[in-house]
Length: 107
Image (cartoon, rainbow, N blue to C red):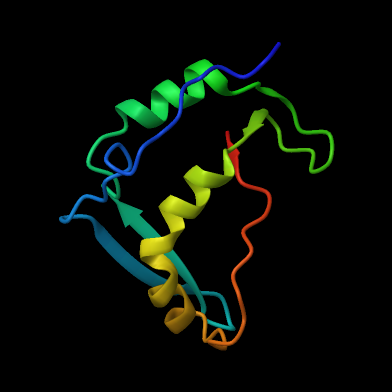
């Protein structure tokens, strides 16, 4: 079964200017956890992408208890790009290190 022609444009992945980011620290090591509410202006296009192109199956590698489908690379990069500067600051990542997102799924 081939992939459908459904793709996301920059306009469809528009970041909600009123999104809210909360950083909480957990555990003895005070590990930062980000909670991001209302990140995208609309989820309609994201839901359409999942509905028309995702191939959900059990994840045998991680034993995730449900089904998953890999996210398209362009979606992951477009979603993370606006957050990268903040992520580098929160997690004290050296600026010379390049980001390389892996294991991104619809779940």
